[in-house]
Length: 176
Picture 1 (spheres, helix red, strand yellow):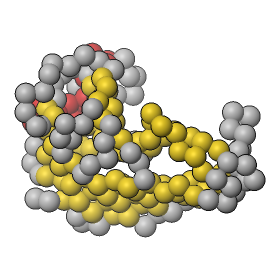
Picture 2: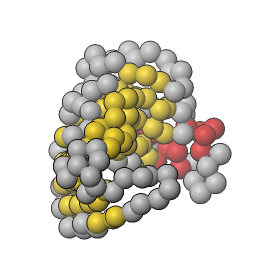
Picture 3: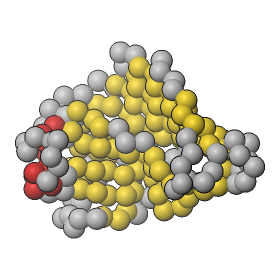
Picture 4: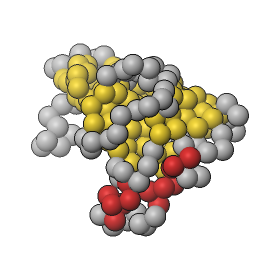
């Protein structure tokens, strides 16, 4: 269990906050808990989330389920979904889902259950083949080896009252 505490104040962030990120890892479970505590005297609002990367055997073999008929917005145009599975290709994806339902990730070999609390949206991201070439510290072909599935609060900011906290949780469990 790792649990660092960060207290930081800059010219760009004028509020007093304490951030705690707790990570729990077992053979079949990965859990992160982000706590944002307002230690100041004034309320503040923020947007954000966690940014986990999931290792894949091959992105084109992976898929996600569990979004149902949730609304979403795409940064990049994608072909319409023809099944309940969100499948991937060499095209970049940055899709924000307006839901916090549980998801199932099939990574090409195993299935994982993804559950969030506190966060109210899912962001799915991969740079695709062309985008990977623009990222200097990412080998050109490595876009095929991961997907970023982020629990976030983006469209609606979270307000944290003085001496109160926001807690966001991500739980990933191995199913098979």
